[in-house]
Amino acid sequence: MTAPDWTHIRAFLATADTGSLSAAARQLGLTQPTLSRQVAALEEQLGVLLFERLGRALLLTEAGHELLGHAKQMGQAAEAFTLTASSQSQEIEGLVRITASDIFSVYLLPRVLKVLADRSPQLQVEIVADNGLRDLMRREADIALRHVRPEQPELVARRVQDAQANLYAAKTYVHAHGAPQTLADCSQHEFIGFGDLGRIIDFLEPLGISLTAKNFRFNSHNGLVAWDLVRQGFGISLMASEAGDNTPGVIRLLPQMTPVLFPIWLTTHRELHTSRKIRFVFDVMAEVLGHRTKNAP
Image 1 (cartoon, one colour):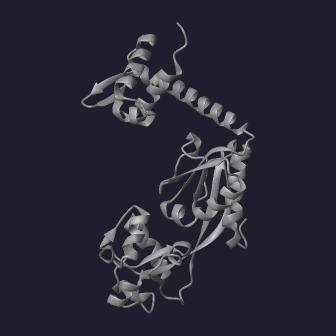
Image 2: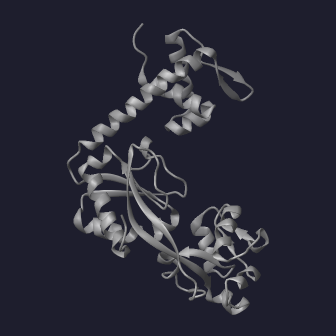
Image 3: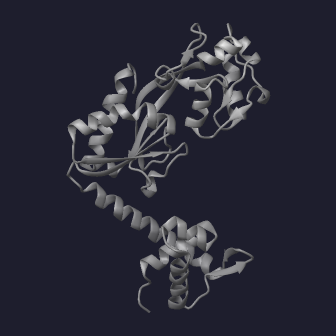
């Protein structure tokens, strides 16, 4: 028997991972009929049934389960092959993908892009604005800008800044509702949520800001949407000073309040870090974003 086609094995992996042909096709950027043919071709070549249909879902057969572990090892080897090949590039040109939250993408990264454009005109940069933790291991991005340090040993990280966050509201909100004079006053005001309200409430409580879900009439998992609600006067929010101090019509509240500090980490894959263009972008980002940091490790 000839060795199976890697594209067919990749189709098998995506289908097993997503549990449906349509989702697997979207993941791989294929049409569903094409992906279905690839899975069928692998089954025919191996002489086994890999999936059985249960309603609209696809379930692995016993043979599929036995082969899945080997297929995953092949997938990891293919990813390692791609990473190693990428790390050999010595030209400061081509595409680098940077992932950051939507707020960071708008208020932090433009300063970095200006420096990159001046120093390396041949470089292309794609900004992947995403509030989730993009998977550097699978090359969904080359560099991540986050406030969480990665735990995977294959990733390297550098703490480039201890950023500040403060309470902000639009001037129109303050004109209509007044401004809190103390942290305790905040419980009488409207707040804008940025996703998980439970986590937000639990985070603010130790700061002396006691809120309940009733304080959050408006909430969005999209950071830019939530921040625009603040800008339009719908409520108060804790926000990084890079955004809050540079948004017209928005003012900082409670100047006596001690700013909330949070770290900003740059992360990349250990092998990608040896690529000249990745290292160049990583170092420029650390340089530009690190100017505000006095004691970053």
